[in-house]
Image 1: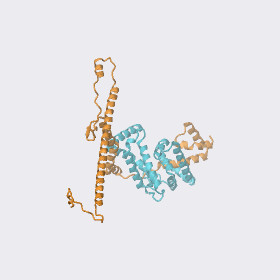
Image 2 (image 1 turned 30 degrees about the horizontal axis):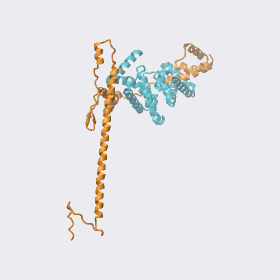
Image 3 (image 1 turned 180 degrees about the vertical axis):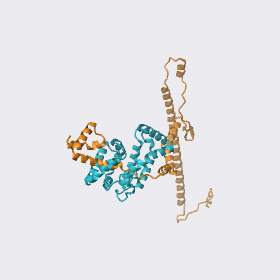
Image 4 (image 1 turned 120 degrees about the horizontal axis):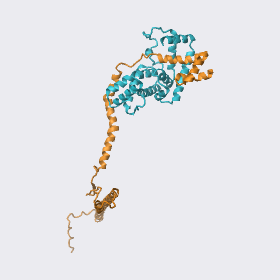
Amino acid sequence: MSDSSSREHEHLLVQRARKGHEDSLRELVDLHKDRLFAFIWRMSRNHHDAEEICQEAFLKAFAALDSFSIKYRFSTWLFTIGYRIGLNRMRRRRPLGSEVDWDGYGLTQRDSAVEVVESEEVSRIKNGVWRAVDRLSPPQRAAVLLFYRHSMGCREISRVLELPVATVKSHLHRARNRLREMLESLPDADLQSFRNFSQRTG
Amino acid sequence: MRCEEAQQLFHSYLDGELALTLQTELAAHRVQCSECRRALALLEVSGHVIRSQPDTACVQEDFSDRLLACMTSPRRRWLNRARWALYVGGPTAAAAVVGMALIGFFDKPNLVAGRITQVDVPARETTLTDTAQDEFPGSAKVSDSERDEQALAEWLQNAQRNVMDKRQDVKSLSETLDLTILQWLEILEERRHELQDEAESADPAGQVVPRSESPDPEPPPDTP
């Protein structure tokens, strides 16, 4: 489905959902729940909290559906609500650390479909990068996740984070620099292994 | 392109916002300069790791069912009804009341000291002017606004008359009350005098001579 047709379909779903059609509500949930959960989970690093925040975000979005403007993407609006709820929760709770559930991190899991075996060097790099991401400030972490994992441009990220575009770019650039500083501490051999690995896996 | 210029373009390039000509120049410099090549690669590696990591954590399968059930729960239905009453039902009812008031549904008779005085906007009366206008279309017409003003003026006169009547009634009532109080004071004053007289007619020794209970006291016996 092309981008314009998906937007039209989304608008139709929103209009029907406003009238209380449960099938449209369910379809909106099914379309966006995984992406929203993935983003919230990587922000909060707690499965239970992430699911609660997702549920609350959907409920708030549907309760305020009349105020949603169709000139924006529903996902952008939903992510904005979810990010705001998650940020408020994180401010009330202690920093990431003891509550992080690393089980779903997936770093040690091997994808059986990939024939190339991941080396220790590559695992070291991935672990290092993700740990560095967890140590970023919430706005920097959100900017990096939305840019790289959700393929959002800086303008769309600015809507989600409710920040000016220049501020979003500043957060993104600083986050990249911090991640680079972490990688600079690793031996070059690791980086070379990672490059080879990337070229083989595409 | 120098290294300083190239390094300033790194983030714009990674943001996907670098012009094509500058992209070409940066690519050429990257081939020639190992330091810039390494620096840019370090920035790209983290992005590649973040982008390529698969999501293994996901919501539970019944997430949608639980969410929709929560939306249609009795508490949420009550909240939705309360929200509807506040934002829809309330204004609708208020608009209905205003409309009814405008058509005079709530006009009530005034009760003034037992006399009922109906206060309402006098009906528009057909005047000679109106008749003349009907018969002679070419003549000057009295506008609707002038007629309304006349009707309003008459209504105001009636209202003022009613207010004056009411004031008179209140004044009469207060006078009545004042009179009653005065009467009571007179009665009390009389009784005080009576008691005083009784005390004065008592025995000098202090004994009180009982008053005769008969309304007509017996005449004193004749003296020889």
